[in-house]
Length: 145
Image 1 (spheres, rainbow, N blue to C red):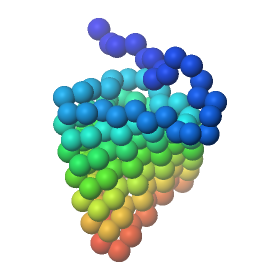
Image 2 (image 1 turned 45 degrees about the vertical axis):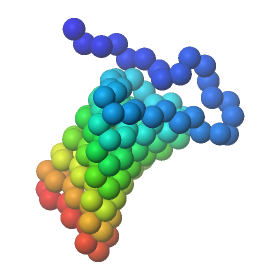
Image 3 (image 1 turned 30 degrees about the vertical axis):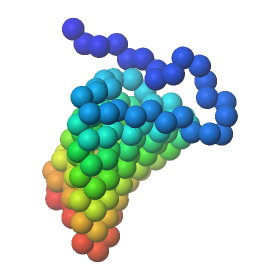
Image 4 (image 1 turned 180 degrees about the horizontal axis):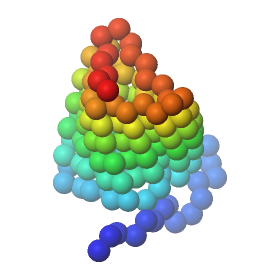
């Protein structure tokens, strides 16, 4: 049986202060959308699976954290920090993924208008870049297609 998709909040975030949601060791956040104004951080031992990162939202994968099958929509942002792993990801038009030094993305799919930035020391492997998609490496960053 497949889990239902649910919003992470029960009410709209009308303030300009971002809402922080943290997945700690042993915790799993599965499915659903990260709405505008929310920041989800996956820490060591935490797992996020099947999340959709909406416009104005961020998903941060810290050292030891794992993200599985995220989709980043226009205006959304996925950041894979040092020691974090994302496998795989889909970056839609206007969406952005940043792989920092010692971060890893295994299996990114970049749609037309989507952007993948691999910073020095970061790695993205098995990258598929569709027509109009972009992958940019800083000096020392690598991506393999």
